[in-house]
Amino acid sequence: MIDSHAHLHMDEFNEDRSDVVQRAKEAGLTALITIGTSVADSDRALETAMRYDFVYASVGVHPHEVKDMEPSTADSLRGLARREKVVAIGEIGLDFYYLHSPKELQFHHFADQLDLAVELDLPVIIHDRDAHRETMEFLAYRKGRLRGVLHCFSGDVEMAAKCVDLGFYISIAGPVTYKKSEPLQKVAAEIPLEAMLVETDAPYLAPQPWRGKRNEPAYVVETARRVAELRGVSLAKLEEATEQNTRRLFGL
Image 1 (cartoon, rainbow, N blue to C red):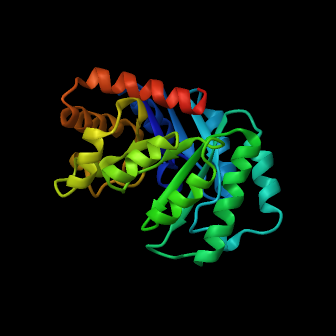
Image 2: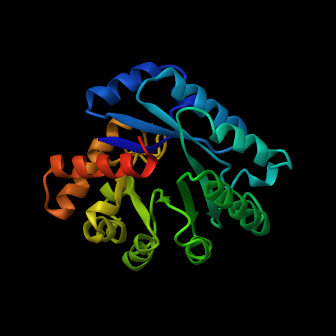
């Protein structure tokens, strides 16, 4: 299977990154995508992807970071996005929970990065926190021109269905294993299997057995196991389907 969203290049893995990669392979992972959140961070993601044969990268500016974007940032992203092993624009989107960047800046740079993905024919990796309505408006406006995934999905079944109708995938992360995650569990149980990815968001959001500790790509198997239980299918079927979906979306 594939961890469709991790941050393997972050400092939390500096002491044992190669061991983390080895554990991921031993857990059965065939690929993982390490996700950029700024130009500098995207550059680190790409460097990490080039070091490991089964690691790919995405490049983008997270809504927390768009307050620091400069006129040259778009050209920098465009250059990075054309590099080998870069498979998506992301993580980009809207975050109204923390509001580390003003809403108007988030809107402006989200639109620009979506349009960059259209220009380069790359999928997008969407961050959406407490901004469901606005996120859906941006995606609906580009229906038919854009493909991608809503990472660490936090909406309801109705929103998930609308995302699938727009041609987007839904990515399920570790919180699906938490006891008080009934809405997410309902999404995981009901969305079409052909529209589902799984992820860790490592080093964040470790699934229940490791909750509160550093997450790592190998733990995506525990998330997949819980989703398989919710759907009443075998883990093998869930793993095979999500791997195929991830490869199809990102062209792996």
